[in-house]
Length: 410
Image (tube, rainbow, N blue to C red; front, side, top):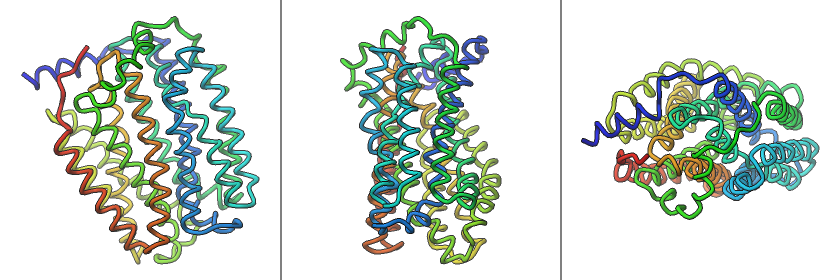
């Protein structure tokens, strides 16, 4: 009975019917916008810990704080700005958020101290438009196309992650950390062009959009609905893991493995390409399973196991194998989790659920930077591995206990 209910729900929300021309244009535009924004976040990951040491006031812990600062304002402002977009419209909130991203990028580009860099990162993060973007996607699309749109936009995060790990070191070799933030400002401007010139005219509020206005009264259901809480926890843990990892991996590549900074981009590119077939296999396997928890658990083990291998690497081969495993697990989870949220959440709560999901993601970004930097400063890589091991045990226990397929409400 449960399997047939899930199958019916999945067929409904993952409709094989094609997008209309307006839906297609809107989804392409919003996915591009999301990708441009996330590139700015991800591009600094493979180089921040190395280049930020040149700034006044830099230490291992303060670098972790500055790296994660973006996530703090993102997490705090996702739900309030989603609510504001209900009141004044999606596009004004998105345009304002992109302007804040541009301003923060400029501040970070001209920073001469780590405190100034952290301020720029906080300002960048205050343009928290993920929930407004997902709500706009819901406004543009029919109910039966909404999860497909959410999955495509969610997958753009994985694409931006792959591009960023290659582009970041290349841009840093050309213009340093400031050059990366200058390019982030340019991408913010391109995002403005997408919103103002590419997206179709703002539609009349759909039934899903009107329901979003009343979602605040059902916030508890959106937070703790069957199957949803562990998905929020999983995206939190995933991005905590990512940010904590990249407080250490760039230095390990340079100091333990002896790989020059100029060659980091090629290592990331090679390992990402090799990882792609594994990602595709895991995502395809999800479609064959009644319950999500086995595939979520497998991806967690791959990501964490690969990370630990990379953190202990003293040779290029060991580092490469670790990064491949990490990228397989991370990219698969980054694609699967938003799609699962869209499936598990009742139709009238999907906008709110995606806002909470985005907040959890960015709280993970902030927490990973803070805790990863603190662990490294306190006890080095060993302390970081111990901390992440404890987190992984709790994460896997939560997945096995709570990641059960709910009876989907419509």
